[in-house]
Image 1: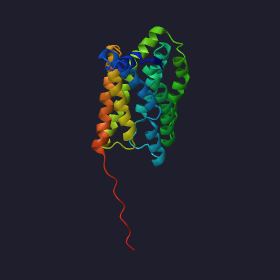
Image 2: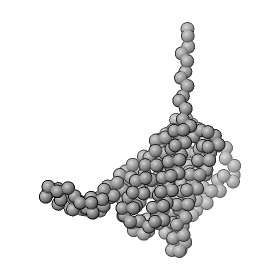
Image 3: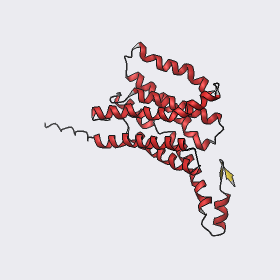
Image 4: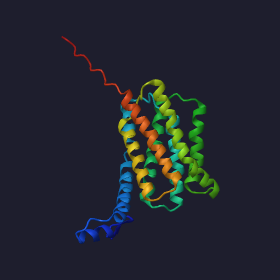
Length: 235
């Protein structure tokens, strides 16, 4: 019995015989299910951050470079996974994360007005190159090099935001819920990648993501200050 690329026959067969599924049967099943859970969760992971910016009409404390690099990293990773024919459960979240990341960067640009002419070079350059990358119309060797660099891109995407938080001793308009889901997703991807016997570089990339996302999450908790309650006016 197979559904969405997940083979349930082993587990169902064991349960029919009144036996608990063995480790070699259960772990791959759990890994696949967790993969699809990440894909499902990714459809809204950046929504809390988007809504927080729109509600406060502010991008205070947000590093635009961090969010721009995220867009680049998601684009490379998605293009590579699609053209390598990987199962959707292994990369599906990248499509939703890329779309949300582009919306998020657009909102940050809007609330960062006025922006100098030089600031528009990066989005224009991305708009020119992204379709070619997503279509896989680049040299295979360059494609491999780009994919190898995407973990470094995600690492450097977090560093400016971590430094911004540290220098300001505040996380500004960063959304706790979005950062928490980013951290949780990274941790789960480490576990599923190890189960799927992914290359060490891939596992290390997700591990670095878990560490940097965990650092930002810790900063939010550390720098969090309760909003001062408004004093009631005495008539």
